[in-house]
Length: 431
Image (tube, rainbow, N blue to C red; front, side, top):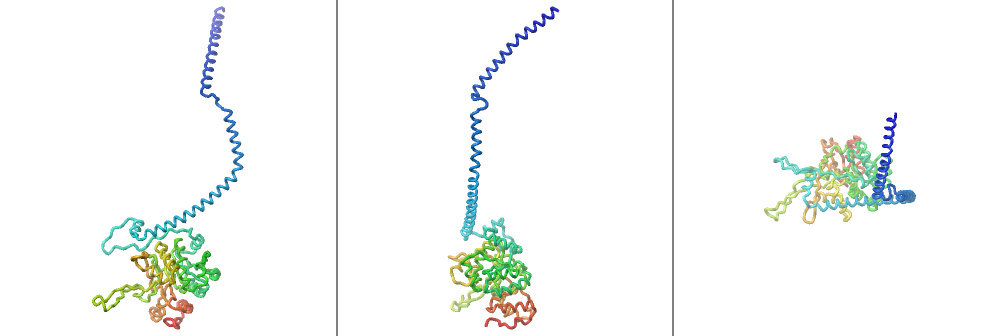
């Protein structure tokens, strides 16, 4: 028993001697750590002043944001309007610069650039196999030119094509006859550009698609009171927007009778495809006219090339750069000089480049004069020939005769109503 107590006392005394040393060590470590933190973190882990400042800033921002929000929104709206206007102005400048660039590049190697744009330059093939480029690429449609017209054309056009007719009240009776034949021929893509309120009202009342342009003083005055030739001259200004929107147009005067759908008889391989004022193969498609000057002796005979003019009252025009340039050139000349639009139309199309003048680089095709017939061919030749009388043209244009309305009605009677003598009353020409 005495031995056991002694052992217990010895263990108790040893453990009590160890405890103060552990406490001393812990105190020493605490002091050292305090010194370290005091050196590296003099303000402590959490700065009460910075926290208070953060909270204060947050409160002030929340209070000021409510006051500034409406002002900020107004500023943003103003910025949006300003940027939208600036964007529209930049678009306009880009279009103008592109047009100036195109004009500046005239006279350079246009054909070379066109081939580069369309693909790799080809090598010439074997003899007799080479063909030049005839069909120019179409322009990229630009609906910003006239959004209202773009929407109308989207509803009316068939495969991006349509007939376009300009009309005012002075030609209303002829328009009525034409509309009758358009419906009989089953032509759906037909649009009247109404130059006055009376034509617009007539079209709407008779289910005819009509487009009345926005007010334009220069156009409206002619549109309201101009005769057939004056109105015809307006088309070169008006048609430009149609081409810019990417549509091919079959331009038609009102003195035309439709017997078939003309879009079934087009080639579409040229910038301009026009009917002719010619009356046979030579005058319609061209011939070698020999000029005789006896005083020149051995060189008395000079060969010239002749072709009768295209009719500016009926032509198909594709939306290409040369086509738009044609319209621009004709419209510009008609605005500066007193001239017949058909004469100017042909001069611009056919005159070649020469010193002081850059010709129009547009491709062209002459329509079949028996299919797209003028009134000289009809009254002087066709009605007198038993075989030709059996033909049914695509259209007949009463362009050679001033008594247009009665002849139009007679053509309707002959081809639609079966009156075989309907054309006999009229003379070949005018009296």
